[in-house]
View 1 (tube, rainbow, N blue to C red):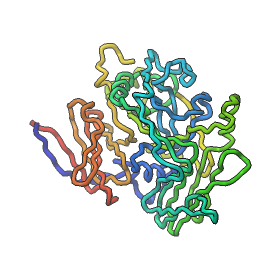
View 2: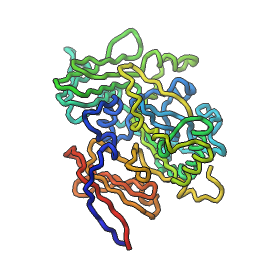
View 3: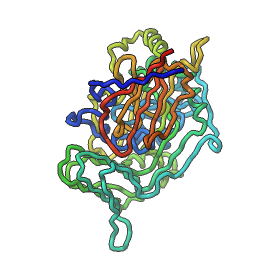
Length: 433
């Protein structure tokens, strides 16, 4: 096999590769700013709305996002949950709202899950330009976290009680399961639940970082020094209350709302002082994209005109913006088997944890660290087994290369950890005999 490498000088707008690399003069929502600065931290997709929807079952609200959840990350930054593949159909979280011929894939907690306390108390993640200090009171007791920045844009996530990470170990089993049932998932979500979804939007949760308290802040267009302080308040409540103080222009949020926590405790005396680790900060997912012929057939069968439908993914829906300075979040709830004779290994294409946009109708691209993307490499007509090339991570000349195989193409984003510049060219690799 020989490969021909050619460098194509391109005049395409960068927004056609990734909306994260758009014109800096174009206004962006708070969630877009937050995603841009936190997605590169290696924890997965950051959520702007961390709290489970109040329309979901009380069991789901008390636990939050779980491994095995099938859903969509919306333009508002929350996980739209449909069902969980790791629970029986009649489990209260599923309540029999599952696709036809649903077959759960049960995980053994001891053998199949990796659970670690990834961040300790008073931890934070932020843009590189933000400086942090930890003031103390006269009694040498911690009184919060303070931040300052002179950058034009940035984001902060604070975790006053730390956070816990949980990941599924048998990822290959989950990938194969998703490929086998993906068509029925899309059919169920579109036809039975009535939710408009683009091909590639559906995600299977394989890991998450959750906590019981958090603070978030974003700022943009700032020309002056910005100061922010995240502090806990002493009240007559048994639970601590957190608030932001700041000078300058910023969007600040904190949660969960104490009243929401009180609602979760109702009806069960044993939960009177319970702390719910149900606030999801990051999701790690398998993204499922159907083959074009399967997707087109599904669209035709459902009599839906998707040719005029713009991608429903969060970065193509520019009409919805961040939620402002609300102190807590609420999501929303909406919520498969393969056709006879089809090979499930090629029915769906799996890729990891990344949003996507389109350069053209036949080329899809994906990037894990949008703020650092400097070059893009597209491989056409790639016929090797997709599963063998999914999510390969290499080190090459000091750069990380994330490769994604999907739709018969291989995509790699070259991320330079020291520079943040826009690509001047694309590398197009084609096979020839």
